[in-house]
Image (cartoon, rainbow, N blue to C red):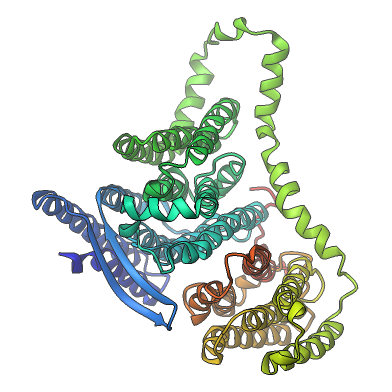
Amino acid sequence: MKELLQFFILLPLLGFFISLLIPRKKETLISRIVFFTAGIHLLGSFAFFVYWLIIGHPTLDIKQLVVYKTDHFEFFIDLFFDKITAVYVCVGSFLTFLVAVFSRFYMHLEAGYKRFFNTILFFFSGYNVAVLSGNLETLFIGWEIIGISSFLLVGYFRDRYLPVRNSIKVFSVYRVGDAALILAMWLSHHLWNENITFLKIHDDALVASRLETQALMGFFISFMFLIAAAVKSAQIPFSSWLPRAMEGPTPSSAIFYGSLSVHLGVFILLRTFQLWEHQWSIRILIISAGLVTSVIASFTARVQSSVKSQIAYSSIAQIGLIFIEVALGLEILALIHFAGNALLRTYQLLVSPSMLNYLIHEQFYNFVPRENKFSKLFPKKIIYTFYMLSIKEWNLDRFMYLAFLKPLTVAAKLFNFLTLKAAIIFFVLVYAGGMFCLFDKDIIPEGLHHYLPTVFGGIGLIMVLKSYTERENVFMAWVLVIMNHLWVALAIALNDNFERSQTVFYLSGVVVSGLLGFFLLYRLRSLEGNEINLKQFHGYSYKYPGIAIVFLIACLGLAGFPITPTFIGEDLMFSHIHEDQPVLAFFTASSFIICGLSLIRCYSRIFLGAYTKAYHDIAYRSS
């Protein structure tokens, strides 16, 4: 029976690859592929669920595939099935099928019809990987697929300014959750001394024995899980990204931000509950975050002029209550609440265009002002204050900018003097010195040896910060990202016994993706006959869709997306960072996160937006 779990992952992947081969003009065939993929998955998941209940609903765990193994590190794919997985798989399968049927007609004659359904199947594959994951590494694979799918669907109308801008904003907030999950994975290796599975975390005696001696480490890991969950489920202070994500088509908003993707934060908390069950500080933080989010989101939802934004904030408020239920240990209630909220929000979003038309008609002909007795209980000044705060969405957007994006920009401006030529000269000279120290470690003074990896890790972070804020030369932004990977590899090699084969394994994906992207940029410059800057959105995907797709793949490979060995190499390198080196871990995690932001920003600026040569219809700036 365990072997059947892989069916739920392989089927959407098979449907995705088949849909890629179908010409975009054959709408009926594309929609049928998605329809039958989601339909077979739905029937299979419910049949499996019934059979699982009949045999006594055992907890299933299978070590599916060992991808990479060393003497002290093992990266493997593990699948896990229990009541939490059962609910998430069945609800996800049903809603994906529902949205697939609805979208067959709703998206008819859209220019991106094939692209939409390709992305839906890609997302569904990542969703199943995440909810069926049996360890953190497998969960992170699905997590990354869902993140890039969100970016593609929010920016679906890629010739408009706001969808493209908001897709970058959503992806930027997602990367905060990625950083938290990476750091949780890093310390988990040291807490358990292995690639821990969720099945072992369910062992209360094992968890208690480790937390008894490593209480601070256990708190930090649990807090990182909370940050990742809050980002994914749009809880305070990360709530502002969800309404921005509604720029995509209504069906994608329904399946992503009304039902499935936005509830993955709840899934993480449910899956790791045994780890923080007896950490009352974490429980209090979860309850506080859920309660504050519910109150603020409820106020904000009442003043929204957009029906999709209103539904988004209503969903956030309900998820806040689910967070409270999870923290109180009410697992069954949380699962029921998840299923009900997901079904309701999907329905509301799918019927929102029709409902909006109906409400406008009713308001025009039969409007009767409703008497609000509740407002009489409070002074007008308090009511107006809350009203204005809600209108401004409690300034959460500005908080995110000041807390996360502005520090990056300010730090990077310190290195505006750096040119591509100067960066290459500095890299060659200093990197050569670092390599000399690596091959002859005896020449390094004992006091300096401990700080050298952190210094090189910091240099790598500076390089990628400069890449993120580069506005003039796209080649410079691209080269600095590659340099960042080389600096990080050198830092880890100096830090621990990092074998050359492991370094080659990690850098293999970087080199291939880097050279491919460099060639495509050079090719694009030759075709257009001018330099490509990053000051504006050029929209080259309109004229060069093939180059755009391949360049996106190169960006994902260079960012460590799970299509190259670099993804495994990143986890491998963190296993060589000791638990008493938080600064090096922070520098390395920040480098990977900002690296992804820089690359997605390069892709968006070059290939998304209205095509600069305006001999075709251009969408308005505002959507």
